[in-house]
Amino acid sequence: MPEGHTLRRLADDLDAAFAGSLVQVGSPQGRFAADAAVVDGSRLLGADSLGKHLFVDFEHDHVIHVHLGLIGGFDVRTDVEEVPLPVGQVRLRIVRADGSAYADLRGATRCELIGPALRDEIRARLGPDPLRADADPDRAWRRIKASHRPIGDLLMDQAVLAGVGNVYRAEVLFRNRVHPLRPGRTLRVGQWRAIWADLVELMREGVVLNRIDTVRPEHTPEAMGRDPRRDDHGGEVYVYRRTGQPCLVCGTPIRTEVLVGRNSFWCSQCQPTFRSRAVESIRAPARGPRS
Image (cartoon, rainbow, N blue to C red; front, side, top):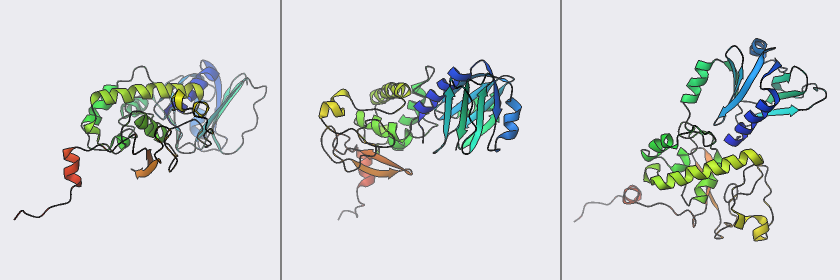
């Protein structure tokens, strides 16, 4: 599933291509035809993202809300001489009135026409987004410090933190030496602040590069004399999808385990299991009465 940096970059691309311009809006596939007709011929004011949600604003208080889901894609093309016929199941097509740019949406989980009130409701349900200047990391911290749920689960909960997916979750925990199963309430505030700052830096870099790179300079292929990573997600990572491969830091085989329906990846040496008296009392076998 696309993570927050993908949606932020997409919002920026839509802004650059269409903001302030009159546009033609259609639904070649037909599933969005009635709503597309409402905004067809109007002015596109701009696009914005929050977490994994995209909002495209039109005049007259119309907003197209998009969630790409697992397989969705929004292809934005600029400086074209001619807009081609749609290919595949294009649910939404936006064309600049002068024909110099177009954008095609395919495979999205959600594409709906809403108003400002519903947009605000959706935003209110989401946690702070590390890519936004107005984000308040303390909102997420209040949820985390009060929860017994694993931090690896909390980071993926969009109501706690918006925009973080499986790749950023795995990588930021590795970089900060935190085990994904560690209960949120056992983290120290300094650890949370370091995780947040790391997410801000990594995700901003993801917007610029359009891929997720998380390894530090000393662990790049060039620095280590190793082969580059080959994976359809691209980018150099420490643990994500590296099950059984040696840790780039210590050489320990990377481990994986399903956590709330998604594979979690970690290094057992660099991310030791957190143990406290409370955790040990839960894991300890029951004992019979003393004689």
